[in-house]
Image (cartoon, rainbow, N blue to C red; front, side, top):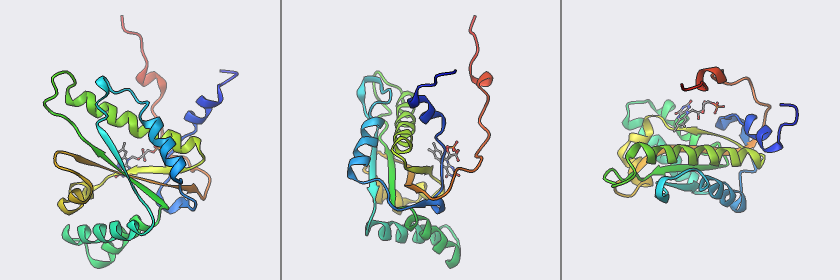
Length: 190
Ligand SMILES: Cc1cc2nc3c(=O)[nH]c(=O)nc-3n(C[C@H](O)[C@H](O)[C@H](O)COP(=O)(O)O)c2cc1C
């Protein structure tokens, strides 16, 4: 398209960037509020809002690092590997935990529709971060199933989806994952 709307150019240029490529500053309160507001624009059948974002920054990063280190040791990693896991919590200026609350018995909205809303919220959150000049990456891993970590982030019945690392990109994007071609996802139904 010759005249691509700037908003689409922004969406088309989003890419993930891991913690070691994220520097200060991270998003401040106003930016985080905007990102959450954009997440709330994601399609959500009957408006269940089946997600929560929990911001980890400042001194809370040390507490999350300690949790990550303990979880790694509990999973059988040695002290050096556990310390690397802890560093992952400390590196990004801001981390946002993504928590899902899926109502398995909802009379109208089945679980898969609620998960779709969670995915839409994550995508919108990351797109908003990118539009504001930040970069980040959604990560999960074995840690999300570790009971002490789940207990630290979730209320009863909630699921820890993972964490979005956020900060200012300190390097240009490298070629990322090859994306599927449009032809693989778009076709005529007859
Ligand atoms: C819920 C969720 C969890 C993810 N967990 C991981 C993870 O643990 N490790 C990882 O390398 N990528 C993970 N990813 C994928 C990355 O966030 C990222 O999308 C992927 O590396 C592709 O990069 P791109 O976003 O630039 O296309 C996860 C994505 C989602 C949506």
